[in-house]
Image (cartoon, rainbow, N blue to C red; front, side, top):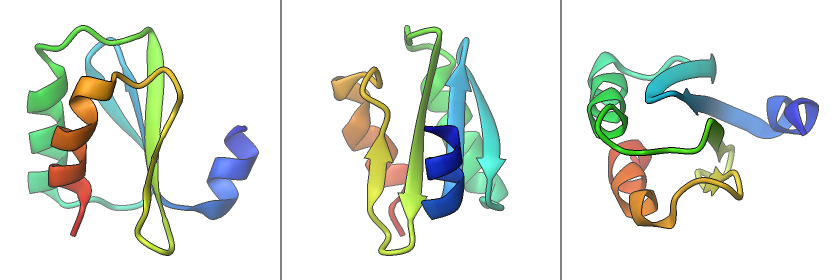
Amino acid sequence: MAQFVERIAIEWYEVQAGRVHVRKGNPSHLKLNALKKLFETEKLPALTSFWTTKDRCIHFKLNFPHNLRPAVLAIVDP
């Protein structure tokens, strides 16, 4: 799956233990800080991710919590 996401993603974020790792892309400092603040207090799976494609759609890994998706969309969506 990683090769597929690497090929289609503009920005790719992995969240592990409440920390955000940028796997692809160059997000703004404000966007990255907002994501870090969101994930530092939430209980998350061991490793999850989300990515943005060229058509500006945001895709989430299946184990990404449904209750956090609207907040992530508000931060990442241009």
